[in-house]
Amino acid sequence: MKLVFLVLRRLFFSSQSNFLFKITNIVSIVSLALGIASLNTVLGAVNGFESKVSEKLSSINGYTTINHLFEDDFLIDQSVLPDFYSNYESSLVPYVEKPAILKSKYNSSNVIIYGLDNSDFKDFNLFNSFHTSLEIINENNVIVGSLLAQNLGLSIGDEIVIFNPLISKRTLERNKFLFLEIKEIYHSGIDDYDSRLVFIPINTVQSYFDLDSSISGWMNFDPFLEIKDVDYPFYQLSLKDRHSDLFEWINTQQWPIIFIFSLIALVSYFNLMGSINILFYEKRFNLAIMKTYGMSNKKLSVIFIIQGMVLALIGAILGILLSLFIISMQEKFHFISLAENIYFVSYLPMIFSINNAVYTLFFSLVCSILFSSVSLIYLLSINPSKILKN
Image 1: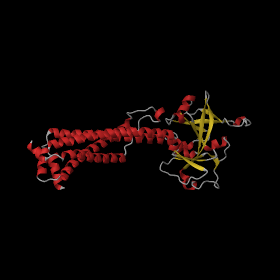
Image 2 (image 1 turned 135 degrees about the vertical axis):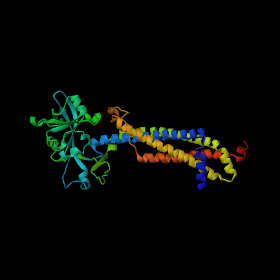
Image 3 (image 1 turned 180 degrees about the vertical axis):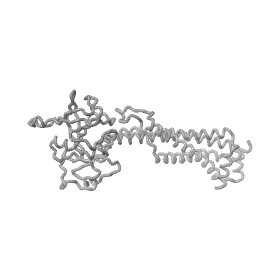
Image 4 (image 1 turned 90 degrees about the vertical axis):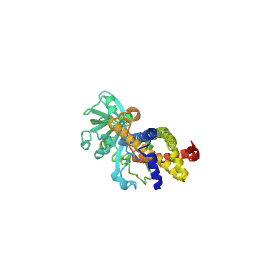
């Protein structure tokens, strides 16, 4: 093996190599770097887009919800609480969900009310941008979406009225309406949420809808928590189950994109094959002499394969570093923008993944071995005597 590395260094890394030989190496490395960079950047965009969309959707409904199979609202009673509740109580956020009509001075709109405990508002990443502390939200406050506020001409401090369309006509007039003051206006970037969802303290919702201590279910905001043993009559609904059409569309789009850019990266390895052929032509007399003196085809093959692996390794590392730079710049400056009302995000999010970098590096080395071996099938079959005669 020492002989192999000595010959490799003298043949391919000598300062006496001619200009054409050096240009060939540079072209191979640059093409590999661009191919790997494009593949790694696309993988980062695919992962980043799905991750960002999941993060946005979970900021409102959590990563999972647990509800009752037969009842829209159920009473929290220690005697009938499910078995799983005691194990995950600290991670579960109780909520009440009710349809209603929200009316301002100028207009009205159908809304979905989410009732939350005062201490649970802080679990919603959706509200992290607020300047005021949500821990001091009182029973007469409400948080509305930006699109709903725009449509109804609302601003912070305005008074609105909540009306339950299912309320009995015999209910006293003063109990038909719930008067609230707008505490904050949130913006999720998802029009369906921003125009419909309003958040109110849970005790206010329970009192207005005559629910006593009943809730609609629990939310889980921990992406790494796996809630097990959710048994009948309760069921668990994940984020991807709730938005199955959206995530199916994401999966449908990502595989053709990854396939196309994988082919682009693969094409760059044909340059490697051409580079090895040029290298053979450049060093054909040296190789013919070594073969005449008894160097086996196996050792000659190792020399060329190592050469191909070195070129692929340099190109892959440069490509990974280039993709890291592109992803960092996109995350910082948002050069590629998107229509938020369509894609749920205002720019194309990207995530640099160490796993993707390792996979592309391994892919690069495997392809270099395969393409180098293909070239060697022809090169090693040539008779050295014919080369020396010419």
